Amino acid sequence: MTIEAMKQALEALEHVHRTGDTQVFDLCYADKVIPTLRAAIEQPRQWQGLTDEEIINVIHPLTMADMADEATDYEIARAIEAKLKEKNG
Image (cartoon, one colour):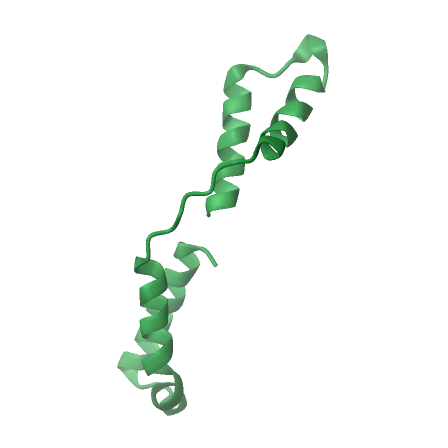
């Protein structure tokens, strides 16, 4: 679950809890769900880099597509950036 998804879930749960729309949620879940989501959002996440294999898998298709139309350094950098964003949410 991404941080953004957790924030949206927490906001929705807090709204339901504040407005009292559902007694079942308030009685059974709110005291566990809201603090758990808040802790997950506030907990620092460990950065995930790319393995050598992942880097090769990103770069290889770009550099081997066609030698006359080889990827630029910029395109390679953007492809690596996209893979890192995918991996780190």
